[in-house]
Length: 179
Image (cartoon, rainbow, N blue to C red; front, side, top):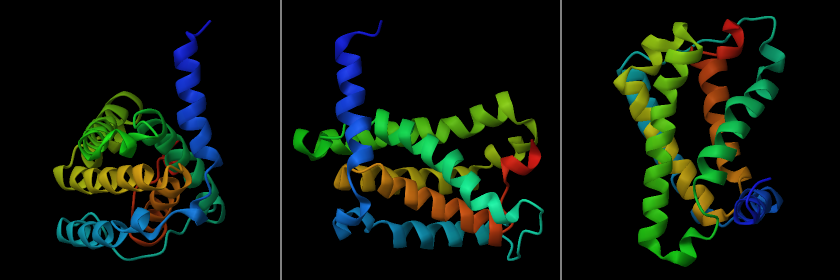
């Protein structure tokens, strides 16, 4: 049986973040999205990671749903909802920034780890430093959005929109197509 404080943490942190509406989040929660978009587009096209084009696959119509669950919902639930205390702002800006930084570092490290252990075909991309720059900026953006909104749905929406646009329109890698 799990210790009481762990169960309470999950209930008060991740559980409550699922109940917080993204529509009630202040505009501050979304403030880094344009910065992320500019950096991702600049780095993505500059490094040759993005190429304009429509994904032509039999599963293209269901990909937005699949991408909502993994990576968006599952990764955000762990990297933001578990790793960042929901009340980080109440603990002070330093604690909030530290929480976002640690969450982002683990999020970035997860990508090469994921490729090396579970998807060897993703190794060239997931070890690409420019790809990891985009992942880092996404981590900071999603971490900030979670800290400010206290809703897991805000970073899930940001993550989902970025990955869906990347996979469907910018030649992105979709691990679902490679299974």
